Length: 346
Image (cartoon, rainbow, N blue to C red; front, side, top):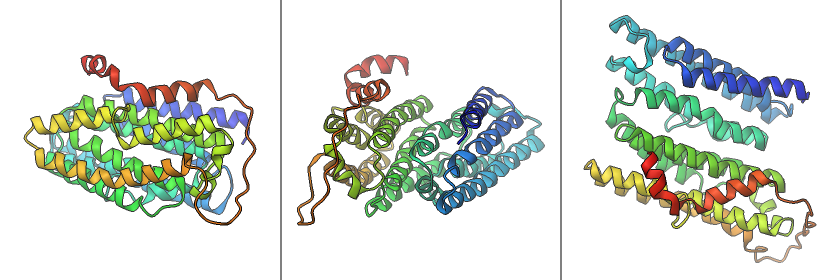
């Protein structure tokens, strides 16, 4: 793609995100979401592969439907209350419609079907934007309206997302699809705590974004897209693959890594809110996603699989690891000891 065109699309993404995050009026928030959708479409379909075109079409249709629902929800609220302010969403029907719209934007179950397909059809760098930056504006809208939303509905969506995200990722061989189901599972953790402690939702989102960025950038460096390629990639950059192993375990939420911090705080907060059964259920369901993280980790570093076919070993690269990956990996793995400081901020 032409670098100038690329720059325009990235600038439009930043503009759309900034407009949505900083707006108080529903129309401005909707405008930001629309700019975001239109800016990411060329980045998804830039390879001109049929799968990429299909991914862009699916993304456009779902996001257009979700944007229409956001507009419909805000108009219904304005009709009944005379308020266009985002924080003044008080009408129950509007709250239900908005929850469905944002769930569709984010890819929460049962509106999740588009996300793995779109991620599979996109390049790794675009997949990274879809998994992290594109989720920030809808998360901001959820954060701003969290006091009005229906707790029962959000809890059901969250538990279903963690269950289906873990269960459907078990049998995948394509790494982008595994990361898509991982994203759905993490969104479940964010949604369940949104009503009770919205700041924890944002903390979970930030840490998830850091860990996912590390994984995507590492895979982009080693040019790995599926498990069979990952099995032989350890010869290319052994130290990088070792750090990928730790980042994957951190994404799974194993102590003493960074990913354990949000899960621990969310379970603690749910227990305080007399939701121990929900906390137990969501913890048990996250074991499903632990399985595929461990599978990825095994393929990343535990040499070759035990069969007789001769795999072509890849040449070791002499390229130094980029500073961004080094910093992100350190944050993804070693942030748990800093949790008291993080808690004072949250």
